[in-house]
Length: 113
Length: 112
Image (tube, rainbow over all chains, first blue to last red; front, side):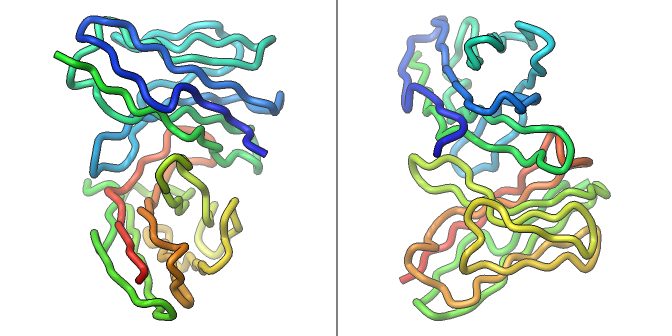
């Protein structure tokens, strides 16, 4: 059972475009939703995270939109740049002793110049 | 601070061989974990530890062993390597169970 479903698997946009990556989750006990960015040959790094008490969070050009009733959250990258080309993972976790992150399968983003 | 370090960067094993992947962190984090990354599969949790002397299984623990004798180190042991264990392995650490996880650079393992 895949607890965090991520789409699309890959995405190609032109520079300046707004790629959107979507994730859906099953478990209503999840209360922490981070996005990680991974460049080739590197480990993932935290990009931005949200908790379900807010519907949107912005950090620079990156925005998470969160829809608690639909159990969905998405990452938007404004004014995308070739340097944003990377693999993006959404994740979810519960609080307390069951707080391990469960990752989506990843989206490979390519931003063309 | 070096952050999370992993050794080796690359390793080739024959089926049946054993080896230990090393992971160390210098951020005094209590929580450490091991993931494997396979194409199209995302990151899957192998084992994790919430502090020295405490370990537990993740989603895909079979064929792997861990121990946590110090806060800094969290080695992952492959008992008898199999081709299905060909993967990229990442170690991560964080202050607590929930929150930002800091990942190491990874170990690319090939089992022939």
